[in-house]
Image (cartoon, rainbow, N blue to C red; front, top):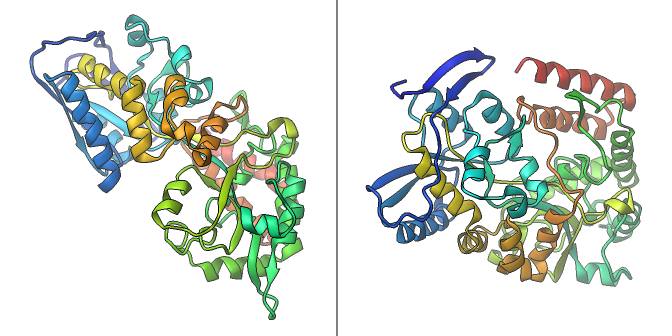
Length: 435
């Protein structure tokens, strides 16, 4: 591949096994260095890419010899192809944790644990455990978290108050009661305002069924427990019960009326007052502001099956790593450390990209953490029960299979829930075994 020390060793499944043994050394705060230009491949485009470029300009101001040029619109597959072709970017942004295990297991991203220790960066003192968990795999730290998403509850304060509620639901039982009361109908029986739309295909509602709020696990010793962890049955039974109480067809027609493209448009059902409560990511605050919604709303953790889990939620977001085969790994590390751990840089990125900051220092000091609407998500991130599912080298195939199963379950196409979950677990194990 034209790079000393880099060799493709084995090809298994879709991912080559890659080795890169060249050392990554701390450069400290060098004021003088031979000019170096690095490339950063990221998925951001447009306004968001401009935010990243702004921080790269600050990096250059701090280290005038170091220039990092962003290449926009590069997804995880582009990064992997670049690495396998021998022309990797110097730094790579992954769109989320779903492919981290694949990159880590194959050696496509360098283990930065050793250089972090040499550079006196105490990862556990810098990042919450919740985000370090999904940036590592197999004992290797192959990326650093660079902001994250977190999911919580958005609720219409006016609609809740009219119904006699002065606080959001904290348990799924409360959510069920409130959703029914808040749902109003037109004369023809169609839904006028939905209290909550539990269909997994509606906006981000699928995240409500991915385990966090039921204390469900995905794997035990590398084997799927979708068919044996009773929490999955409780979660899916809860969802089905709420759907039946309102009507699957009515909910489906209501969602269709809002429009498939309405989630990220100004006619969003929540922003227009047609949905009283919904699960969504922290980014909704930015969308609602940009869309100039007139809805008086607030945010809270999503209700939980077990009160002990209230306050937690699903998390997971952008990761930054050093691909195998880069020509300037030490310089890449310097830039990576700056972007992921410099408090000023991270706070600026959080303010611009509207995502949850990921270091203890930035969680304490960022505007994001002080805004009452977004601070909810900073707190969710720090809850000890918040998590991303256990990573596998199969990426998110397990999520995709579960989502497809949920759709059939909601539509009444699954007669035996426990049997269906057992088969689902077998399917997940098959998929994870062949990758």
